Image (cartoon, rainbow, N blue to C red):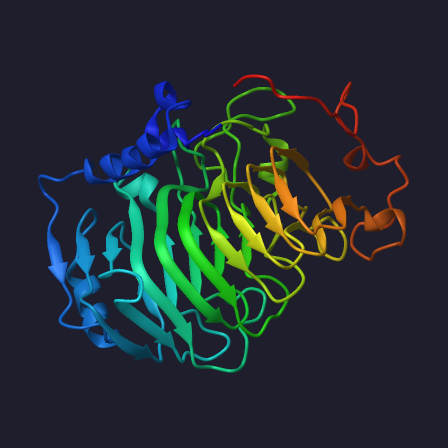
Length: 374
């Protein structure tokens, strides 16, 4: 089973072979604005040369970085919908020596308003770290941030779509490797092994997600409206089986302990066809200790977990698990609600009386079954 995001390969190809689906990714990205797109080649892999090439690029252009190694001491900030393409894993190697509070690459996009038909892609790199101080929870090596307004259908208001990270090695990045904030897209064929850890390697949230209609009345919301603090994501539908998620696909994650990911704040994430070595899989935040809500929806399927720990920890949202395999695992998925155990300052204890602590009408807390066809 291979549900490719429909923004990458179209509803007619949902059940195509995985090889054809991956080919469709390349065709889709290559087909956008090829007539007016330019290719700018950086003189070297140095921060100065890559920064100069990015500065000269326009939406839709491709910036290529030649083979070579370089150490960057400052953040590369990208605000354009471009393709940043290295010579390949092990060929173009960037070592981060930025301080612990600064990302190596910061991608800040608003393309639904300014360039709705363009995409952002980053591919063909090995990233390393020479800074022994790990990146804290919200300061990843790669930060993706979307904040588009307005966004016409089929896009999601408040989020950016058509983003792809692929064919990269993240070699012992200390702390958080990737943070995805209000971005829909895919990370595929990523090989990542963590260095010094804070708590997780990956993090997704959808803090700017905004429904197009008022969930209480069904009336359309004005295009100027934007939800805050991820409550818009929780007010909207789950959209299981659609492209309205951030996807991890065909990735290989190796961690020393605890979680590969710790998603939060309205996140909508799909993990599929990935291998997880060690650690406890994919975790999710709940509504304890902060005002923002926890994870909204996740699909976790066709993955292989090689670990002596548990599958994952889930503290909020709707989660679909199916067709996963494991070796050495001692416990399955954990479903936890810490607010049943303690009275937290922001939201208090969960007594069941608050409507936010209840399941939707006629929805049981847990459903099991067998998928026979898709």
